[in-house]
Length: 173
Image 1: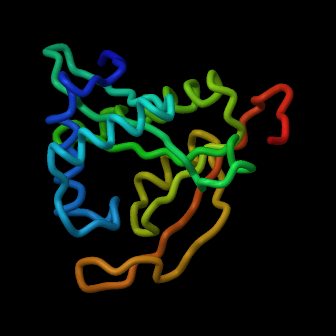
Image 2: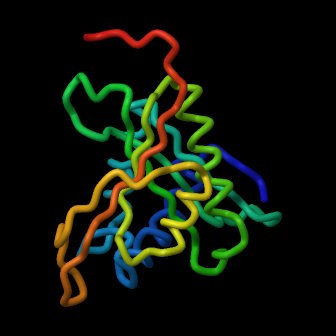
């Protein structure tokens, strides 16, 4: 496994395929419509503008196995030290440590950018993601019952957070 910084030209199509599989078949995303390459263009532009990493893991042949990123948690200024992350692994590469490595890389990136809190919103039925986050030190910090509706049922959303030692000297404003 090789950690890479994802680039639009090289990785957008693979990220799109991973996203769309999750949208169509899971409750990892509370979304109904599949994404398009136009969506990916805007997504990468937002990540670039916000200086948010898009970290990938490739196999030995250069195929993207999964990716992770983070972005704005809430858009008000006092939340500037908090980010919400997401991690997606191609179905063919699950249960191989890819997700764990991606979360570890996201933690390191957040520390390097002086964020203080990493937040993950996880569907309450996603036991594998919950277990992974708990193993990496995240703690449950809330549940929103019936937050979404997909596949004919109400979905509960659980939040997990990891408090980082950074930044050393936070400031208002």
